Length: 126
Image (spheres, rainbow, N blue to C red):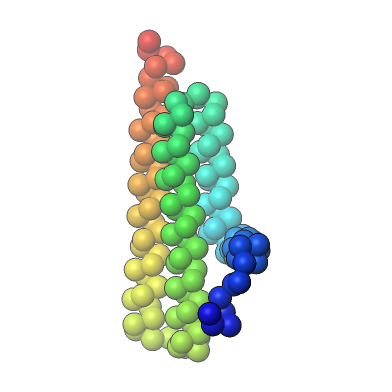
């Protein structure tokens, strides 16, 4: 076991929670996505979506948050490697990572809207 591996579950959990805290405190877009996830789940609760639909919305929102965290890690690693200097490969890598966040957010929004549209239709037309 190397010096960077945790020896017990409690310590690993502490490191993971610290990572979530750091993402929340340092990443503005993570906070925005978290707020949108809260709104999305509130709407789902208000519309009384089924358990399966609720789980799908939770999964879609969580995917956006996870991709945002991975994007942040990629940016930190690239900045460290290139010592915060501009480089074409650094820009391309960061752009692709940001594109992954955008794609996951768009798909999450589409999933939520499709579920909500069905529920709103049921409320007003059935």
